[in-house]
Length: 322
Length: 257
View 1 (cartoon, rainbow over the protein chains, first blue to last red):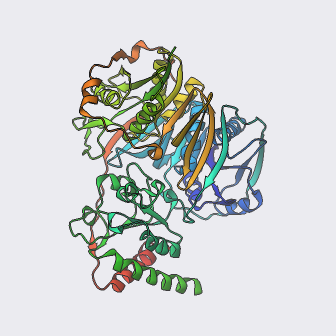
View 2 (cartoon, chains in turn green, blue):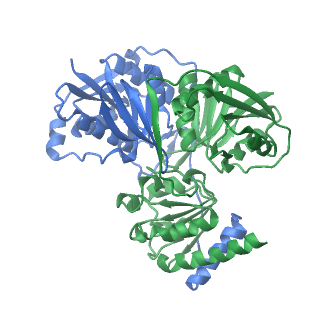
View 3 (cartoon, each protein chain N blue to C red):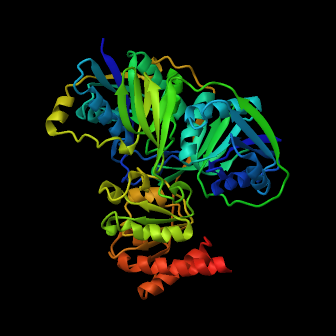
Protein backbone atom coordinates (compact mmCIF):
# COMPACT_ATOMS: atom_id res chain seq x y z
CA UNK A 1 0.00 0.00 0.00
CA UNK A 2 1.42 3.37 -1.03
CA UNK A 3 1.54 6.17 1.50
CA UNK A 4 0.34 9.53 0.20
CA UNK A 5 1.37 12.50 2.32
CA UNK A 6 -1.36 15.06 2.85
CA UNK A 7 -0.06 18.47 3.79
CA UNK A 8 -2.74 19.68 6.16
CA UNK A 9 -3.43 23.29 6.99
CA UNK A 10 -4.64 24.69 10.27
CA UNK A 11 -6.10 28.07 11.02
CA UNK A 12 -5.60 29.09 14.65
CA UNK A 13 -5.05 25.47 15.68
CA UNK A 14 -8.12 24.11 13.87
CA UNK A 15 -8.04 22.09 10.67
CA UNK A 16 -9.35 23.96 7.64
CA UNK A 17 -12.41 22.48 5.97
CA UNK A 18 -10.61 22.41 2.58
CA UNK A 19 -8.26 19.67 3.89
CA UNK A 20 -10.89 16.97 3.75
CA UNK A 21 -11.16 17.00 -0.04
CA UNK A 22 -7.58 15.64 -0.03
CA UNK A 23 -8.62 12.80 2.27
CA UNK A 24 -11.49 11.94 -0.09
CA UNK A 25 -9.05 11.93 -3.04
CA UNK A 26 -6.80 9.33 -1.40
CA UNK A 27 -9.81 7.27 -0.40
CA UNK A 28 -10.68 6.68 -4.07
CA UNK A 29 -8.08 3.94 -4.36
CA UNK A 30 -7.74 0.88 -2.09
CA UNK A 31 -3.98 0.70 -2.72
CA UNK A 32 -3.34 4.08 -1.15
CA UNK A 33 -3.20 5.24 2.39
CA UNK A 34 -3.27 8.89 3.38
CA UNK A 35 -0.73 10.11 5.90
CA UNK A 36 -1.75 13.47 7.30
CA UNK A 37 1.28 15.70 7.84
CA UNK A 38 1.02 18.35 10.55
CA UNK A 39 3.69 20.52 12.17
CA UNK A 40 3.74 21.33 15.90
CA UNK A 41 0.00 20.79 16.18
CA UNK A 42 -2.44 20.31 19.07
CA UNK A 43 -2.71 16.68 18.12
CA UNK A 44 -5.55 15.72 20.47
CA UNK A 45 -8.24 17.75 18.71
CA UNK A 46 -6.88 17.13 15.25
CA UNK A 47 -6.72 13.37 15.70
CA UNK A 48 -10.45 12.96 16.30
CA UNK A 49 -11.36 15.17 13.34
CA UNK A 50 -9.01 13.30 11.01
CA UNK A 51 -10.25 9.90 12.19
CA UNK A 52 -13.77 11.00 11.28
CA UNK A 53 -12.59 11.72 7.72
CA UNK A 54 -10.95 8.39 7.11
CA UNK A 55 -7.33 9.29 7.87
CA UNK A 56 -5.69 6.49 9.81
CA UNK A 57 -2.14 7.80 10.04
CA UNK A 58 -0.88 11.18 11.20
CA UNK A 59 2.75 12.20 10.82
CA UNK A 60 3.36 14.79 13.50
CA UNK A 61 6.50 16.86 12.90
CA UNK A 62 8.05 18.54 15.93
CA UNK A 63 10.56 21.26 15.17
CA UNK A 64 13.16 22.83 17.39
CA UNK A 65 13.30 25.92 15.14
CA UNK A 66 10.70 28.46 13.98
CA UNK A 67 7.95 26.61 12.10
CA UNK A 68 6.44 29.88 10.84
CA UNK A 69 9.49 30.34 8.61
CA UNK A 70 8.39 28.87 5.25
CA UNK A 71 11.90 27.80 4.17
CA UNK A 72 12.46 26.03 7.50
CA UNK A 73 9.01 24.44 7.51
CA UNK A 74 9.53 23.13 3.96
CA UNK A 75 12.89 21.58 4.97
CA UNK A 76 11.24 19.87 7.95
CA UNK A 77 8.47 18.40 5.77
CA UNK A 78 10.93 17.22 3.10
CA UNK A 79 13.05 15.56 5.82
CA UNK A 80 9.99 13.82 7.30
CA UNK A 81 8.97 12.56 3.83
CA UNK A 82 12.43 11.09 3.34
CA UNK A 83 12.44 9.50 6.81
CA UNK A 84 9.08 7.75 6.25
CA UNK A 85 9.68 7.02 2.53
CA UNK A 86 6.68 9.12 1.45
CA UNK A 87 7.02 9.58 -2.30
CA UNK A 88 3.80 11.49 -3.03
CA UNK A 89 2.58 14.64 -1.38
CA UNK A 90 -0.74 16.42 -1.86
CA UNK A 91 -1.30 19.93 -0.56
CA UNK A 92 -3.73 22.74 -1.24
CA UNK A 93 -3.24 25.53 -3.74
CA UNK A 94 -3.82 28.01 -0.93
CA UNK A 95 -1.51 30.83 0.17
CA UNK A 96 0.32 28.37 2.46
CA UNK A 97 0.49 25.67 -0.22
CA UNK A 98 1.78 28.11 -2.81
CA UNK A 99 4.67 28.93 -0.50
CA UNK A 100 5.47 25.42 0.81
CA UNK A 101 4.85 23.00 -2.09
CA UNK A 102 7.27 24.68 -4.55
CA UNK A 103 9.91 24.87 -1.81
CA UNK A 104 9.56 21.15 -1.09
CA UNK A 105 9.57 20.35 -4.83
CA UNK A 106 12.74 22.39 -5.29
CA UNK A 107 14.43 20.67 -2.32
CA UNK A 108 13.59 17.21 -3.70
CA UNK A 109 14.04 18.25 -7.37
CA UNK A 110 10.65 16.63 -7.81
CA UNK A 111 7.84 17.37 -10.26
CA UNK A 112 4.96 19.50 -8.96
CA UNK A 113 1.73 20.66 -10.54
CA UNK A 114 -0.20 23.34 -8.73
CA UNK A 115 -3.90 24.11 -8.96
CA UNK A 116 -4.93 20.60 -10.03
CA UNK A 117 -8.63 20.14 -10.71
CA UNK A 118 -8.19 16.38 -10.71
CA UNK A 119 -5.39 14.02 -9.71
CA UNK A 120 -4.81 10.36 -10.56
CA UNK A 121 -2.34 9.35 -7.85
CA UNK A 122 -1.74 5.94 -9.42
CA UNK A 123 -0.62 7.07 -12.88
CA UNK A 124 0.75 10.46 -11.71
CA UNK A 125 -1.51 12.32 -14.10
CA UNK A 126 -3.29 15.54 -13.31
CA UNK A 127 -5.62 17.99 -14.93
CA UNK A 128 -4.99 21.68 -14.40
CA UNK A 129 -6.14 24.88 -16.01
CA UNK A 130 -3.68 27.00 -18.00
CA UNK A 131 -3.81 30.25 -19.98
CA UNK A 132 -6.13 31.96 -17.50
CA UNK A 133 -8.53 29.05 -17.43
CA UNK A 134 -8.92 29.01 -21.22
CA UNK A 135 -7.39 25.55 -21.56
CA UNK A 136 -7.23 22.39 -19.48
CA UNK A 137 -3.93 20.49 -19.60
CA UNK A 138 -3.37 16.84 -18.79
CA UNK A 139 0.13 16.56 -17.37
CA UNK A 140 2.16 13.49 -16.48
CA UNK A 141 4.59 13.81 -13.58
CA UNK A 142 7.80 11.82 -13.92
CA UNK A 143 10.43 11.24 -11.28
CA UNK A 144 11.01 9.54 -7.96
CA UNK A 145 8.70 11.85 -5.97
CA UNK A 146 5.37 13.41 -6.98
CA UNK A 147 3.95 16.63 -5.63
CA UNK A 148 0.48 17.96 -6.22
CA UNK A 149 -1.30 21.17 -5.31
CA UNK A 150 -5.03 20.54 -5.31
CA UNK A 151 -7.41 23.40 -6.03
CA UNK A 152 -9.56 23.84 -2.90
CA UNK A 153 -13.20 22.69 -3.06
CA UNK A 154 -12.88 20.54 -6.22
CA UNK A 155 -13.32 17.25 -4.37
CA UNK A 156 -16.25 16.72 -2.06
CA UNK A 157 -15.18 15.67 1.45
CA UNK A 158 -16.55 12.38 2.81
CA UNK A 159 -17.13 11.15 6.32
CA UNK A 160 -15.68 7.76 7.20
CA UNK A 161 -14.64 6.79 10.70
CA UNK A 162 -11.33 5.02 11.26
CA UNK A 163 -8.77 4.79 14.03
CA UNK A 164 -5.95 7.32 13.66
CA UNK A 165 -2.42 6.42 14.71
CA UNK A 166 0.20 9.13 15.30
CA UNK A 167 3.81 8.89 14.09
CA UNK A 168 6.23 11.41 15.56
CA UNK A 169 9.21 12.98 13.82
CA UNK A 170 11.53 15.56 15.33
CA UNK A 171 13.34 17.99 13.03
CA UNK A 172 16.34 19.30 14.91
CA UNK A 173 18.01 21.62 12.44
CA UNK A 174 18.47 25.28 13.27
CA UNK A 175 16.72 28.03 11.33
CA UNK A 176 18.62 29.02 8.17
CA UNK A 177 20.80 32.12 8.54
CA UNK A 178 20.24 33.13 4.92
CA UNK A 179 16.44 33.34 5.24
CA UNK A 180 14.98 34.68 8.47
CA UNK A 181 11.40 35.48 9.32
CA UNK A 182 11.58 38.78 11.18
CA UNK A 183 7.88 39.19 11.87
CA UNK A 184 4.43 38.53 10.58
CA UNK A 185 1.99 41.40 10.24
CA UNK A 186 -1.66 40.55 10.07
CA UNK A 187 -4.48 42.88 9.19
CA UNK A 188 -6.98 40.18 8.62
CA UNK A 189 -10.50 41.27 7.82
CA UNK A 190 -12.08 38.34 9.68
CA UNK A 191 -13.46 36.56 6.61
CA UNK A 192 -12.24 33.18 5.29
CA UNK A 193 -9.42 33.07 2.74
CA UNK A 194 -10.61 33.78 -0.79
CA UNK A 195 -9.00 30.69 -2.32
CA UNK A 196 -10.81 28.39 0.10
CA UNK A 197 -14.12 30.24 0.52
CA UNK A 198 -17.35 28.39 -0.27
CA UNK A 199 -19.20 31.63 -0.95
CA UNK A 200 -17.73 34.91 -2.22
CA UNK A 201 -19.44 38.31 -2.43
CA UNK A 202 -17.44 40.36 -4.92
CA UNK A 203 -17.69 43.99 -5.95
CA UNK A 204 -16.45 45.93 -8.95
CA UNK A 205 -16.67 49.36 -10.52
CA UNK A 206 -20.35 49.58 -9.60
CA UNK A 207 -19.49 49.68 -5.88
CA UNK A 208 -18.33 53.30 -6.44
CA UNK A 209 -16.04 53.50 -3.38
CA UNK A 210 -14.38 51.55 -0.58
CA UNK A 211 -17.00 52.32 2.10
CA UNK A 212 -19.69 50.66 0.02
CA UNK A 213 -17.81 47.37 0.33
CA UNK A 214 -19.23 47.28 3.87
CA UNK A 215 -22.49 46.21 2.21
CA UNK A 216 -20.69 43.13 0.86
CA UNK A 217 -19.00 42.43 4.20
CA UNK A 218 -22.37 42.62 5.94
CA UNK A 219 -23.76 39.90 3.64
CA UNK A 220 -20.56 37.84 3.87
CA UNK A 221 -20.63 37.77 7.67
CA UNK A 222 -24.08 36.15 7.60
CA UNK A 223 -22.68 33.13 5.74
CA UNK A 224 -19.05 33.05 6.89
CA UNK A 225 -18.33 34.01 3.28
CA UNK A 226 -15.40 35.98 1.87
CA UNK A 227 -15.32 39.31 0.02
CA UNK A 228 -13.53 39.75 -3.30
CA UNK A 229 -13.05 42.59 -5.75
CA UNK A 230 -12.38 43.23 -9.42
CA UNK A 231 -9.21 44.85 -10.65
CA UNK A 232 -10.92 48.23 -11.07
CA UNK A 233 -11.85 48.26 -7.37
CA UNK A 234 -8.29 47.55 -6.23
CA UNK A 235 -6.61 49.79 -8.80
CA UNK A 236 -8.81 52.65 -7.55
CA UNK A 237 -7.57 51.95 -4.04
CA UNK A 238 -11.06 51.14 -2.71
CA UNK A 239 -9.91 47.82 -1.22
CA UNK A 240 -6.48 46.12 -0.84
CA UNK A 241 -4.85 44.18 -3.69
CA UNK A 242 -5.18 41.07 -1.56
CA UNK A 243 -8.90 41.07 -2.31
CA UNK A 244 -8.52 41.01 -6.08
CA UNK A 245 -10.01 38.05 -7.93
CA UNK A 246 -8.77 37.43 -11.44
CA UNK A 247 -5.82 36.90 -13.73
CA UNK A 248 -3.42 38.87 -11.56
CA UNK A 249 -5.28 38.29 -8.31
CA UNK A 250 -6.61 35.25 -6.48
CA UNK A 251 -7.97 32.27 -8.37
CA UNK A 252 -11.06 31.16 -6.51
CA UNK A 253 -13.30 28.15 -6.68
CA UNK A 254 -16.37 28.71 -4.50
CA UNK A 255 -19.72 27.00 -4.64
CA UNK A 256 -21.32 30.38 -5.23
CA UNK A 257 -19.76 33.56 -6.59
CA UNK A 258 -21.92 36.65 -6.31
CA UNK A 259 -20.72 39.51 -8.51
CA UNK A 260 -22.02 43.01 -7.79
CA UNK A 261 -21.25 45.76 -10.27
CA UNK A 262 -18.63 43.63 -12.02
CA UNK A 263 -18.66 43.80 -15.83
CA UNK A 264 -16.90 40.43 -16.19
CA UNK A 265 -13.73 40.95 -18.24
CA UNK A 266 -11.82 37.94 -19.59
CA UNK A 267 -9.19 38.61 -16.90
CA UNK A 268 -11.78 38.58 -14.13
CA UNK A 269 -13.25 35.32 -15.40
CA UNK A 270 -9.75 33.83 -15.31
CA UNK A 271 -9.99 34.00 -11.52
CA UNK A 272 -13.53 32.79 -10.91
CA UNK A 273 -14.84 30.87 -13.90
CA UNK A 274 -14.79 27.53 -12.08
CA UNK A 275 -17.31 28.70 -9.47
CA UNK A 276 -20.17 26.22 -9.44
CA UNK A 277 -22.82 28.94 -9.48
CA UNK A 278 -22.33 32.54 -10.57
CA UNK A 279 -24.92 35.14 -9.63
CA UNK A 280 -24.51 38.62 -11.13
CA UNK A 281 -26.21 41.87 -10.23
CA UNK A 282 -25.50 44.72 -12.61
CA UNK A 283 -27.43 47.77 -13.71
CA UNK A 284 -25.87 47.59 -17.18
CA UNK A 285 -27.77 45.12 -19.32
CA UNK A 286 -24.78 44.89 -21.70
CA UNK A 287 -22.31 43.74 -19.02
CA UNK A 288 -20.43 40.68 -20.31
CA UNK A 289 -20.97 38.79 -17.08
CA UNK A 290 -24.73 38.58 -17.68
CA UNK A 291 -24.15 36.28 -20.66
CA UNK A 292 -21.87 33.94 -18.73
CA UNK A 293 -23.47 33.38 -15.36
CA UNK A 294 -26.22 31.19 -13.91
CA UNK A 295 -28.51 33.86 -12.49
CA UNK A 296 -28.59 37.58 -13.02
CA UNK A 297 -30.57 40.62 -12.10
CA UNK A 298 -30.38 43.88 -14.05
CA UNK A 299 -30.79 46.09 -11.02
CA UNK A 300 -29.10 48.75 -8.93
CA UNK A 301 -26.87 46.84 -6.53
CA UNK A 302 -27.51 49.47 -3.84
CA UNK A 303 -31.13 48.28 -3.75
CA UNK A 304 -30.33 44.57 -3.86
CA UNK A 305 -27.52 44.40 -1.29
CA UNK A 306 -29.43 45.79 1.73
CA UNK A 307 -32.42 43.59 0.84
CA UNK A 308 -30.12 40.59 0.51
CA UNK A 309 -28.50 41.27 3.87
CA UNK A 310 -31.94 41.36 5.52
CA UNK A 311 -33.00 38.16 3.75
CA UNK A 312 -29.79 36.41 4.77
CA UNK A 313 -30.25 37.55 8.36
CA UNK A 314 -33.76 36.06 8.44
CA UNK A 315 -32.66 32.84 6.74
CA UNK A 316 -29.61 32.24 8.91
CA UNK A 317 -31.55 32.94 12.13
CA UNK A 318 -34.22 30.51 11.00
CA UNK A 319 -31.53 27.96 10.28
CA UNK A 320 -29.75 28.30 13.62
CA UNK A 321 -33.02 28.09 15.58
CA UNK A 322 -33.90 24.76 13.97
CA UNK B 1 33.53 45.31 -10.89
CA UNK B 2 29.83 45.97 -11.40
CA UNK B 3 27.12 44.09 -9.57
CA UNK B 4 24.59 42.27 -11.66
CA UNK B 5 20.86 42.29 -11.17
CA UNK B 6 19.32 39.60 -13.33
CA UNK B 7 15.67 39.79 -14.21
CA UNK B 8 14.15 36.62 -15.64
CA UNK B 9 11.25 37.40 -17.96
CA UNK B 10 8.83 35.29 -19.98
CA UNK B 11 7.15 35.96 -23.31
CA UNK B 12 3.50 34.96 -22.84
CA UNK B 13 0.21 35.29 -24.74
CA UNK B 14 -1.76 38.43 -23.90
CA UNK B 15 -4.26 37.56 -21.19
CA UNK B 16 -7.06 38.90 -23.39
CA UNK B 17 -6.09 36.68 -26.37
CA UNK B 18 -8.34 33.89 -27.55
CA UNK B 19 -6.45 30.65 -27.02
CA UNK B 20 -6.99 27.70 -29.35
CA UNK B 21 -5.32 24.30 -29.22
CA UNK B 22 -3.18 22.87 -32.01
CA UNK B 23 -1.87 19.35 -32.43
CA UNK B 24 -3.40 18.12 -29.19
CA UNK B 25 -0.87 19.51 -26.76
CA UNK B 26 0.10 23.05 -27.78
CA UNK B 27 -1.61 26.36 -28.37
CA UNK B 28 -1.90 28.21 -31.65
CA UNK B 29 0.77 30.87 -31.19
CA UNK B 30 -0.64 33.23 -33.76
CA UNK B 31 -1.82 35.62 -31.02
CA UNK B 32 -0.35 38.72 -29.38
CA UNK B 33 2.47 37.91 -26.98
CA UNK B 34 3.92 40.26 -24.39
CA UNK B 35 5.96 40.31 -21.20
CA UNK B 36 4.45 38.30 -18.34
CA UNK B 37 2.74 40.99 -16.20
CA UNK B 38 4.47 40.03 -12.93
CA UNK B 39 7.85 40.29 -14.68
CA UNK B 40 7.08 43.96 -15.39
CA UNK B 41 7.11 44.52 -11.64
CA UNK B 42 10.45 42.68 -11.41
CA UNK B 43 12.06 44.85 -14.13
CA UNK B 44 10.65 48.03 -12.58
CA UNK B 45 12.08 47.13 -9.17
CA UNK B 46 15.49 46.27 -10.63
CA UNK B 47 15.61 49.62 -12.44
CA UNK B 48 14.58 51.41 -9.25
CA UNK B 49 17.40 49.73 -7.29
CA UNK B 50 19.90 50.56 -10.05
CA UNK B 51 18.97 54.27 -10.02
CA UNK B 52 21.80 56.43 -8.65
CA UNK B 53 24.24 53.53 -8.70
CA UNK B 54 26.73 53.44 -11.55
CA UNK B 55 28.21 50.08 -10.59
CA UNK B 56 25.04 48.07 -11.13
CA UNK B 57 23.96 46.47 -14.37
CA UNK B 58 20.42 45.18 -14.99
CA UNK B 59 20.37 42.16 -17.30
CA UNK B 60 17.10 40.72 -18.62
CA UNK B 61 17.18 36.99 -19.33
CA UNK B 62 14.61 34.98 -21.25
CA UNK B 63 14.33 31.38 -22.39
CA UNK B 64 12.14 31.10 -25.45
CA UNK B 65 11.64 31.23 -29.16
CA UNK B 66 13.12 33.94 -31.39
CA UNK B 67 9.97 36.04 -31.01
CA UNK B 68 10.74 36.41 -27.29
CA UNK B 69 13.23 39.10 -28.36
CA UNK B 70 10.26 41.46 -28.30
CA UNK B 71 9.79 40.94 -24.59
CA UNK B 72 13.52 41.51 -24.02
CA UNK B 73 13.32 44.74 -26.04
CA UNK B 74 10.42 45.80 -23.80
CA UNK B 75 12.56 45.00 -20.75
CA UNK B 76 15.33 47.22 -22.13
CA UNK B 77 12.83 49.98 -22.99
CA UNK B 78 11.76 49.83 -19.34
CA UNK B 79 15.40 50.32 -18.32
CA UNK B 80 17.32 47.03 -18.42
CA UNK B 81 20.88 47.63 -19.68
CA UNK B 82 21.21 44.51 -21.78
CA UNK B 83 19.48 41.24 -22.50
CA UNK B 84 20.19 37.57 -23.10
CA UNK B 85 17.90 35.34 -25.12
CA UNK B 86 18.42 31.61 -24.71
CA UNK B 87 16.89 30.19 -27.86
CA UNK B 88 14.84 27.08 -27.55
CA UNK B 89 12.08 25.89 -29.84
CA UNK B 90 10.58 23.32 -27.51
CA UNK B 91 8.41 24.13 -24.54
CA UNK B 92 10.25 23.59 -21.27
CA UNK B 93 8.84 22.58 -17.92
CA UNK B 94 9.88 24.62 -14.91
CA UNK B 95 12.50 22.03 -13.90
CA UNK B 96 14.41 22.60 -17.16
CA UNK B 97 13.62 26.33 -17.29
CA UNK B 98 15.20 26.84 -13.87
CA UNK B 99 18.27 24.86 -14.93
CA UNK B 100 18.57 26.92 -18.11
CA UNK B 101 18.22 30.24 -16.29
CA UNK B 102 20.69 29.16 -13.59
CA UNK B 103 23.26 28.10 -16.21
CA UNK B 104 22.85 31.40 -18.09
CA UNK B 105 23.32 33.43 -14.92
CA UNK B 106 26.33 31.36 -13.80
CA UNK B 107 28.08 31.85 -17.14
CA UNK B 108 27.50 35.62 -17.17
CA UNK B 109 28.87 36.82 -13.89
CA UNK B 110 28.11 36.65 -10.19
CA UNK B 111 24.59 37.88 -9.37
CA UNK B 112 23.78 40.32 -6.61
CA UNK B 113 20.02 39.95 -6.96
CA UNK B 114 17.81 37.87 -9.21
CA UNK B 115 14.29 39.12 -9.75
CA UNK B 116 11.42 37.53 -11.59
CA UNK B 117 7.64 37.53 -11.50
CA UNK B 118 6.07 35.35 -8.83
CA UNK B 119 4.40 33.27 -11.55
CA UNK B 120 3.78 33.21 -15.30
CA UNK B 121 0.24 33.71 -16.50
CA UNK B 122 0.46 31.18 -19.35
CA UNK B 123 1.34 27.83 -17.79
CA UNK B 124 0.73 29.03 -14.21
CA UNK B 125 3.31 26.67 -12.71
CA UNK B 126 4.04 28.93 -9.67
CA UNK B 127 7.44 27.33 -8.98
CA UNK B 128 10.25 28.53 -11.25
CA UNK B 129 11.67 31.11 -8.75
CA UNK B 130 12.00 28.38 -6.12
CA UNK B 131 13.71 25.93 -8.48
CA UNK B 132 16.03 28.65 -9.79
CA UNK B 133 17.07 29.47 -6.22
CA UNK B 134 17.62 25.79 -5.39
CA UNK B 135 19.81 25.38 -8.49
CA UNK B 136 21.92 28.36 -7.46
CA UNK B 137 21.81 27.47 -3.74
CA UNK B 138 20.31 30.79 -2.77
CA UNK B 139 17.44 31.82 -0.53
CA UNK B 140 14.20 32.81 -2.21
CA UNK B 141 11.13 34.84 -1.30
CA UNK B 142 7.97 35.03 -3.35
CA UNK B 143 5.06 37.42 -3.75
CA UNK B 144 7.39 40.23 -2.72
CA UNK B 145 5.45 43.47 -2.27
CA UNK B 146 8.15 45.54 -0.55
CA UNK B 147 11.95 45.55 -0.75
CA UNK B 148 14.58 47.37 1.30
CA UNK B 149 18.33 46.99 0.81
CA UNK B 150 20.44 46.88 3.96
CA UNK B 151 24.21 46.23 3.84
CA UNK B 152 24.73 42.70 2.52
CA UNK B 153 21.13 41.71 3.10
CA UNK B 154 17.69 42.52 1.78
CA UNK B 155 14.53 42.88 3.80
CA UNK B 156 11.39 41.97 1.92
CA UNK B 157 7.70 42.07 2.64
CA UNK B 158 6.00 38.97 1.29
CA UNK B 159 2.27 38.86 1.05
CA UNK B 160 1.76 35.37 2.38
CA UNK B 161 -1.97 35.56 2.58
CA UNK B 162 -4.49 38.28 1.84
CA UNK B 163 -4.01 40.62 4.80
CA UNK B 164 -0.93 38.83 6.13
CA UNK B 165 2.60 39.96 5.39
CA UNK B 166 5.79 38.12 6.33
CA UNK B 167 8.85 40.32 6.84
CA UNK B 168 11.83 38.28 5.68
CA UNK B 169 15.55 39.03 5.84
CA UNK B 170 17.73 37.30 3.30
CA UNK B 171 21.42 37.31 2.57
CA UNK B 172 22.46 38.20 -0.97
CA UNK B 173 22.62 36.88 -3.60
CA UNK B 174 18.99 35.81 -3.49
CA UNK B 175 15.97 35.26 -5.72
CA UNK B 176 12.90 37.48 -5.42
CA UNK B 177 9.51 36.70 -6.96
CA UNK B 178 7.73 40.00 -7.59
CA UNK B 179 4.09 40.36 -6.60
CA UNK B 180 1.64 42.86 -7.88
CA UNK B 181 1.78 45.23 -4.93
CA UNK B 182 5.55 45.82 -5.33
CA UNK B 183 5.36 48.89 -7.59
CA UNK B 184 3.65 50.43 -10.59
CA UNK B 185 5.35 49.18 -13.77
CA UNK B 186 7.36 51.69 -15.77
CA UNK B 187 5.60 52.76 -18.93
CA UNK B 188 8.34 53.34 -21.52
CA UNK B 189 8.30 56.56 -23.53
CA UNK B 190 8.97 56.64 -27.26
CA UNK B 191 12.60 57.79 -26.73
CA UNK B 192 13.05 54.87 -24.28
CA UNK B 193 11.88 52.48 -26.97
CA UNK B 194 14.21 54.00 -29.59
CA UNK B 195 17.13 53.86 -27.14
CA UNK B 196 16.42 50.23 -26.31
CA UNK B 197 17.02 49.23 -29.93
CA UNK B 198 20.69 50.12 -29.51
CA UNK B 199 21.13 48.16 -26.31
CA UNK B 200 22.92 44.80 -26.64
CA UNK B 201 20.86 41.63 -26.96
CA UNK B 202 22.96 38.47 -26.82
CA UNK B 203 21.59 35.24 -28.22
CA UNK B 204 22.70 31.74 -27.45
CA UNK B 205 21.26 28.28 -27.82
CA UNK B 206 19.97 26.30 -24.90
CA UNK B 207 22.12 23.42 -26.14
CA UNK B 208 25.25 25.55 -25.68
CA UNK B 209 24.69 25.71 -21.93
CA UNK B 210 26.01 23.14 -19.49
CA UNK B 211 22.89 21.69 -17.90
CA UNK B 212 22.81 18.41 -16.04
CA UNK B 213 19.78 16.53 -17.29
CA UNK B 214 17.10 16.21 -14.65
CA UNK B 215 15.72 12.87 -13.50
CA UNK B 216 12.25 14.33 -13.20
CA UNK B 217 9.90 16.06 -15.63
CA UNK B 218 6.38 17.35 -16.16
CA UNK B 219 5.05 16.37 -19.58
CA UNK B 220 1.96 17.98 -21.07
CA UNK B 221 0.24 15.07 -22.78
CA UNK B 222 -2.92 16.77 -23.80
CA UNK B 223 -4.37 20.25 -24.00
CA UNK B 224 -7.99 21.10 -24.62
CA UNK B 225 -9.98 24.29 -24.76
CA UNK B 226 -11.97 24.77 -21.58
CA UNK B 227 -15.64 24.94 -22.30
CA UNK B 228 -17.98 26.57 -19.90
CA UNK B 229 -21.61 26.56 -20.73
CA UNK B 230 -23.89 28.45 -18.49
CA UNK B 231 -27.50 29.22 -19.23
CA UNK B 232 -28.21 32.52 -17.55
CA UNK B 233 -31.59 32.85 -15.90
CA UNK B 234 -32.90 36.32 -15.22
CA UNK B 235 -34.20 37.16 -11.74
CA UNK B 236 -37.05 39.64 -11.75
CA UNK B 237 -39.24 41.38 -9.24
CA UNK B 238 -38.73 43.82 -6.40
CA UNK B 239 -35.39 44.07 -4.57
CA UNK B 240 -36.82 41.95 -1.76
CA UNK B 241 -38.11 39.32 -4.17
CA UNK B 242 -34.74 39.11 -5.92
CA UNK B 243 -32.98 38.89 -2.54
CA UNK B 244 -35.28 36.03 -1.47
CA UNK B 245 -34.61 34.20 -4.71
CA UNK B 246 -30.83 34.55 -4.17
CA UNK B 247 -31.16 33.20 -0.63
CA UNK B 248 -33.19 30.31 -2.01
CA UNK B 249 -30.41 29.50 -4.52
CA UNK B 250 -27.75 29.68 -1.79
CA UNK B 251 -29.75 27.46 0.53
CA UNK B 252 -31.52 24.92 -1.64
CA UNK B 253 -29.45 24.73 -4.81
CA UNK B 254 -25.88 25.42 -3.63
CA UNK B 255 -26.64 24.15 -0.10
CA UNK B 256 -24.16 26.47 1.55
CA UNK B 257 -26.18 26.74 4.75
